[in-house]
Image 1: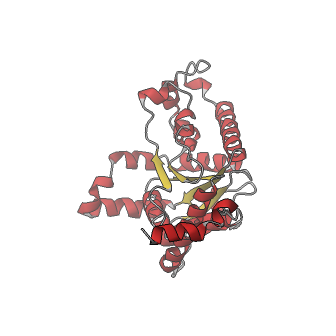
Image 2: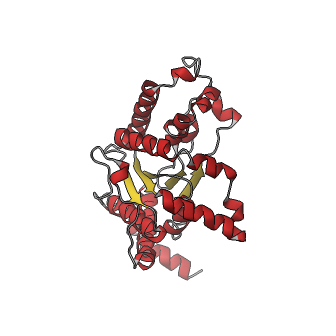
Image 3: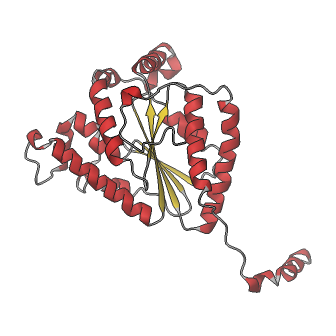
Length: 282
């Protein structure tokens, strides 16, 4: 697991984008059953929530990963939020507000498909977006310098530390996709009629900004991977293997907590036979 965990300064260009486990699909079927059991115990215990954050370039496989990794979890036990362009209401609050109110309740797994990190990623590539937040200290794009984004990343660190200290287990995954594989996946969307709906001309515009996105990702990975909310850089060129690696990481972390359902109070335990008799003699 530590192979993928960001525990020191990294260079994304030196990180692998492709690993292949030929037994990935079979192993994932086993692991997601274990994740389901752990979520049930976590729900019964009622002390912790889990927040899974997924980031990655377009076509990195976030949607299908969510579907496959959490397929066995009780539908009421996992809540997925996909954050799009902020609404008018959301822009009337600070940039973390919409993420805070979407946090999972204790006992549940919350998945952020694109996350609060878009606020130091997309807004850094397209700083004009920040102007819509009407921040008093920001008069123009010139105010959106490195200091602004470094401060915002520190605010995110504080946000994650706060929720971690109050019972939310935070795990963050960057799906590390190669530019060549992204091209292949975009072409697939164009070639397969049933996949056409996934394509947007905007994908090509953003692809031209690949190097800038990679720089911003590297910055946020190095500055916001903390022990209480670690980042994991997952090779994403092979989808089945990427899903397996994410599932393995989640499972390995959650096992350490040894969630346990509360026991029946003693006064009820001694009456179990009487309760059974009442039901059987109805």
